Length: 329
Ligand code: UDP
Image (cartoon, rainbow, N blue to C red; front, side, top):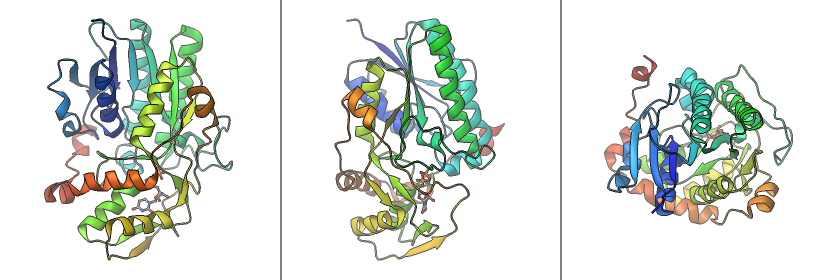
């Protein structure tokens, strides 16, 4: 049978590993590529038994070689939490810029279609609400988030350039806050932070007064949106996210209720350039992809909580084994 072959960078990460699952289930031959800085083999361990699954331990910021044919490339390699890109800012810039350039070159050479993972961070701390794709954003280039935001903005620019000047088939997804099983417990993101704290019997840390908003999308909905965008013929950026918006304070209350923890909320300073509000305008995804999220926060949080509950005590306390200093060398 003539299987389509797909390369998924960041394949051992949270989103990448869910994409590997989806493409294996759809009958593709899948290559996951990851340098395991923030990814983890345990996310894809179950896939190694498939004849159609391969894993390459490689940093896409360096020249990428894949033998044989390639039909699709999904570029999902990048640190994606504020804590990570504070720890490894240069790698964050390199994977979004040099890494994207390498993968666009690979797509061109293989005549493959490439989808790149962009982010709502291209809108920065938005002054337009909700955020449509036409909004150009409000980004501090030299702030702590600049390394991620600007790498992703460059990524979009170079992707469009390869589309326009080299006729590469490109797709750009702007991902809004997404959650689900396989998030790293202490990558600093708000959901694993709160659930981890509840499970360890610690107080829940709200940054700022908790009035800032986010809109959380369950991972399966996101993966469906990515799948549809990849197979569409639309080359401009498309927002994928769940428009159901909530303040971080109310979100903390939901987690307290879900976990039944008797811990309280404590307040810590708001990190610099933390966006005050975020909600995707998904009109384009609705009309072009006939997509909208299906999983409510209630359902999604329950599944995610069950996943975190299933972790061992060791994982709960020492989930982050990564040696960032090692990777900086
Ligand atoms: N946040 C919080 N407590 C935490 C971790 C995060 O209040 O322990 C806040 C953070 O300041 C931000 C929101 O939750 O306003 C979402 O943070 P996250 O890092 O998950 O994503 P991002 O800021 O990139 O949307």
